[in-house]
Image (cartoon, rainbow, N blue to C red; front, side, top):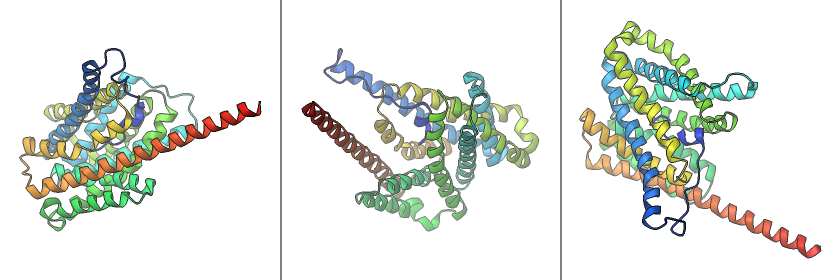
Amino acid sequence: MPEAAGRATASGGAAAPGGPGAPGGGDGSARRSLGPVSLVVASGLSVQFGAAVAVLLMPRAGALGVVSLRLGLAAVVMLAFCRPKVRGYSRADWGTVIAFGTAMAAMNSFFYQAVDRIPLGTTVTLEVLGPLALSVIVSRRLVNLLWAALALGGLALLGGGFDRLDPVGVAYALAAGGMMAAYIMFNARTGRRFPQVDGLALALGVGALLTLPLGIVESGAKLMVPSTLVLGFAVALMSSVLPYTLELLALRRLPAPTFAVLMSLEPAIAATAGFLVLHQALSATDALAIALVIAASIGAVRTQTARRGRMRTEVAKARAKAAARAKTKV
């Protein structure tokens, strides 16, 4: 789902609090760990059920109209809440946030065009292939060929066979995945250049400005119908504002790798939302396809995390050796 893979970087992650040996350990520690996990799961539910509501809104406002309503209303809420400053930033800072907003606008536009043509669960499964491909390429480890093979296996099984899906919808979903990879990179850069979620709020404003003309061209005055505005506001809250708030709270106590693994479950949540809200049936083959892509995504995350852990250990050992040599010389 749009913004799912990159939302963490806007606010930054934090390590989980102490383990069993910490004060109030044991059951208390387990409860503290369960709390942020529940927040992340609630965020995923909000995003995907928000996407299902967006599909219901499309007959009234069209796919691009829904995008403009979602980003526009979310931008209003976030800008009013965050009140980011606009002075004191360099051209590079503004270039980054504009690129971030552009990637956000393109990702959401492609995503909603896809869910207008193929099932929600299938769309989200195809979309996560973008970040998964980015992770595999960056890691450059042989084991990632296994995760790539699992993902391709899932891709071949989707919809009872890849060739049975609407090719235009598939193309839009894959394009959304490619833009999600760009979104993640610019999200991270924006998070380093802007405090708190100021960069995110400004990027939402950029995305809203880019998509609003498209929504007006497609739907015109239909966007201003009160019932359409109410549903659009619900989509903005469920797909943007509420998830950001829940994840901001969760990331204060949850390690970033755990967050990434939980985000890998979103195709399953999307398929559930599609079934419950949109009555999109899920075959055993579709379920297997989604499971393969989820397994590939989790595997890629765990591999990358293990690699970083080994690198940190090696750096710590090198520093310890250097310190020991310095003491010996003294």
